[in-house]
Image 1 (cartoon, rainbow, N blue to C red):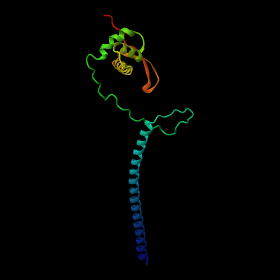
Image 2 (image 1 turned 60 degrees about the vertical axis):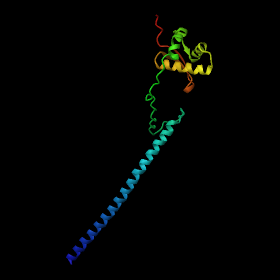
Image 3 (image 1 turned 180 degrees about the vertical axis):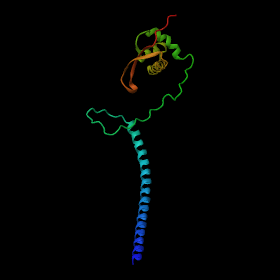
Image 4 (image 1 turned 30 degrees about the vertical axis):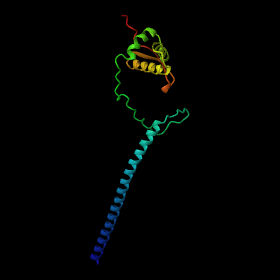
Length: 175
């Protein structure tokens, strides 16, 4: 009888262990499937967050002084467009820049001037439409500032409507 009880007990233990092993393998399979699905979903959500950050980064954020600080880290700013990648256009020889630079130095010397004054000087030299002369004066001042010949003294306004006043970086050399 003792042998029968022992064999029966071993079979019961063995079947219990087998059932437990099958249950653990099924749970492992289910968890692996769930983990794979969660990884895929995480990738989708990260892409969506990146897209939303780019959209939010493009919108101006109003500054509110009464707002409580956020508990979350701020979103990284979107990458700035690379402006330096565009090659600089070459200017033609004998352009308006070379023609007007001595006249600008003569008229304004060490004084401060703006695009409007340069426009007036251009219209004296070449009468024509003021709008075209203003664009030419603005372009001339921008080129001279980029080359370091002019320095900006002050700026009024913001964005594309900013008005700058300039002066020469170095006084004209006496000949």
